[in-house]
Amino acid sequence: MPLSRPMPSMGRPVESRYIELKLALSEHLRRRRVRKHITQDQLAKLMSSSQSRVAKMEAGDSTVSLDLLIRSLLTLGESERDLAKIIAAARG
Image (tube, rainbow, N blue to C red; front, side, top):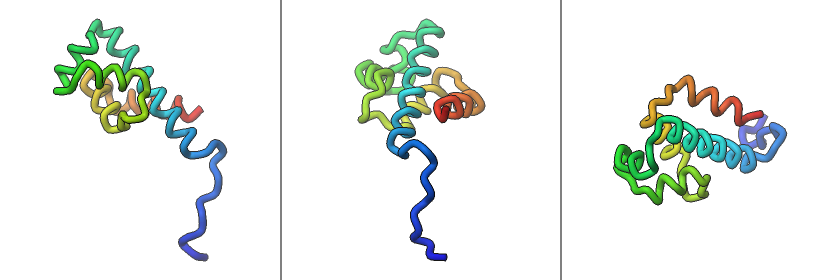
């Protein structure tokens, strides 16, 4: 069996699932920040970033990496288990 064979389809296109995951993390970031009564500027300072970058993260901007979203959620106190739950829920 050749190794270059394409992977079987898993339902929705990969790009669609990726976008849904980023949007779920973005929304959870905003909710978690508001629940903790932290401003975008305060979170930005905790992360050595900018308020505008936090705003882009929360808006699901395409220039924001998954790495940055995950680091921001960890900064707000989310556990690895919490992140796993968010990701599992985004899979639908």
